[in-house]
Length: 215
Image (cartoon, rainbow, N blue to C red; front, side, top):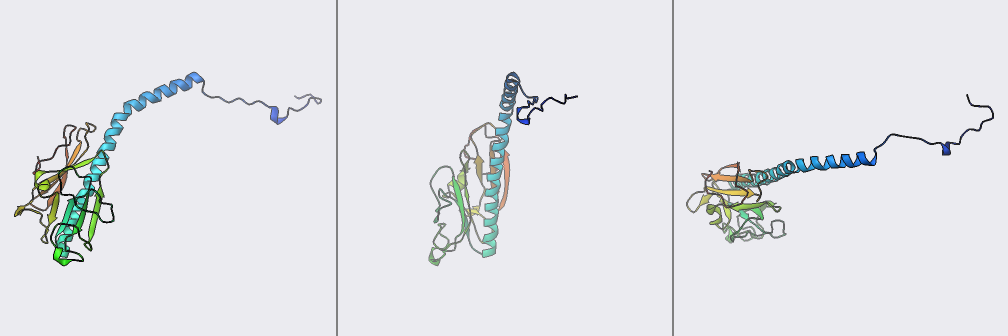
């Protein structure tokens, strides 16, 4: 019981104590966290790369499916081609050798100049259906049937893609040069001119050109 004459301690001078971490405990916690992060990093990188591969491959597959359906609907040719400037105001196809850094899909009806219809080149007034960009270190590599056709896939009005006079058998490989994950590629196959699908591929950490047919 407080003596009647004792003074009450001001609130500002009261001392409070709360439990906390000592410096040693904090250092131990940081060390454990560092070990856990080091163990988890390879798995995290593999999951991240796998998601990037799948996302890009599915986006490219959607582009092909839309191109095929639009060719039938419009009764016109639709081209999907390699492009180094897909997001530009006036994108263009790149017919040279090398990996794809992007793509464009357009209706090849001549646009403002009907005489230029079916020339496989994006002209003023032609409708661009879809575009896509590839973020490094991902690359897209075409099989010989596609790279040999000036890096283009052309769907005719019947919905079929052809290489010269025969139905197209070709593949586009979405790839990242790493062993994390082991299945470091996604092969988008076009068979019999219209049947399309994506398949995981162990490319042994490299990004070489795929074969024309699924393997």
